[in-house]
Image 1 (cartoon, rainbow, N blue to C red):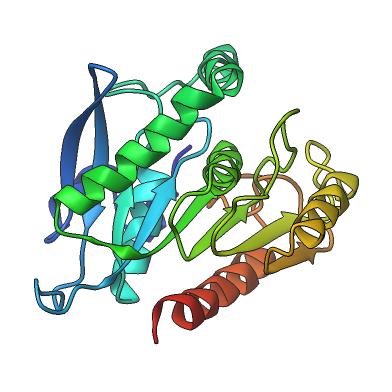
Image 2: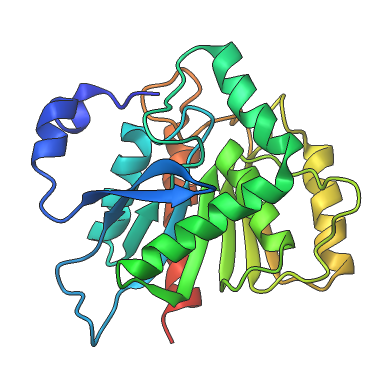
Length: 251
């Protein structure tokens, strides 16, 4: 998943001009993972910036997530973009993407450990994990909801065109924080029926939530440069996301 060159000239130029971001290597189950951490220049140990944990789609942690992290940093947030696949694992073939995501869908306990490890790693960098929101794209959105169902201590959970189904035996009974979902009405992979089912589950468990749909927007409508990209839906969802962060993380 690549961002078009007009956003920053080239990948090399973009990486070399990041003044405050850094790659962070960490361990989960004895295996190396590599995330990306960035924080605003105004953040200090005494005045930590609110934190966003960012979970990638089935491409792994790529330039797309780094770009989004930088956008959030410019808006005043510290961001830890997690790695859910492993250091250097950035699949490009569909069958490889399916293999990596499928393995984690089958091992939900490991998926939960991976997301929690990202939070713990952010905390080790001095991030304000007591004032955070977890967000994700596509597969990362499904991981966000897995984290929410695990009863994780987060003020909010946000998905962009993410998987919405609840595995058998799970529920939102122990969810803390609110849930915000951005969904394309023309998504043929994750349907409006799936969205409605999630809404019913959240309502039954009295979880504060907001479910927003965008007419004509397909799956992955926020991905720059993709034939699925829909500028209006992307811009509207990003604006609402920033509003939500302000409402949720700023007293």
